Image (spheres, rainbow, N blue to C red):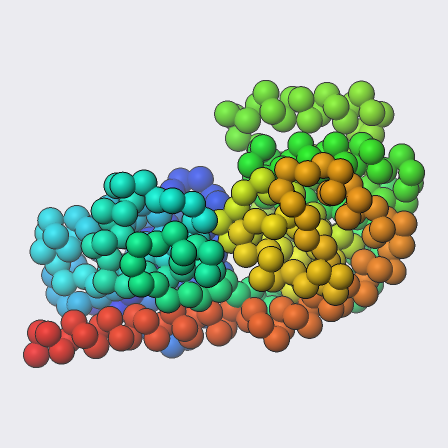
Length: 351
């Protein structure tokens, strides 16, 4: 993309693919319908406008632009561009964290022109005014299967129904809680198979070995599958295939996978972390449980395994809720409005 035409740069400066990366890359095609925006950094698919960082650094003096950071390192680069190189950037930061920020992070946040929070909980940890814009989901990319049983059979895995937990495999995500709940439940429900997808990082090797050893000891290697990280294009397929999605996180910033499951017509059991309490309607689209509570997790999952029709009904309700409240097009429009306001202010100062 010609940098001279760009109004907004959305950096993704982490080498490792993450939930933040997924959010940025999902949003940009929708934002690009209404504003000249490009991504810079890693993991930029061909469907997303892109600009090399060297053009950002060398071309930043030519006109006012917005730098939209979502991590500390991206805020640091924005501050250096503006205050170190004296380029006319407007700095925007999105915060999803539901915890007290470090002194250094607070220092960076104070230098932003505008701050967005992905939930009211995240906003409450910011020591300045923020605009709350909840994440949306691409309702065209994440869609329900016409028949869940047939979709599951396409996997070639055992049983008639699937239950999934997706995301990086580690303690923070509650992967061990999910495995233990499955070891308790699956022997009673032979038509169900559990699938775990997500990055298995080298630093989590001991944790993952323990999970696999527990699965083997329970004799459930065929029915609790650790699939590793799946290609981005296959992620919607797995949400579509499973009848129940479990989000057992011990803590979470937002928790976009819960929305992706609902958009896919999949019932949800989630811990009360991140934005799940605002997304999941208890007893209608799924269930909410306390974090790090294995008994509560097991009890919330079992009614769906005993009655697959319940999962279908709540999955249908989840899709309707996603359509009503969580379309990514609305999120993109709200963020673009902030960009335009910042650019208009900068132009007014320059005129």
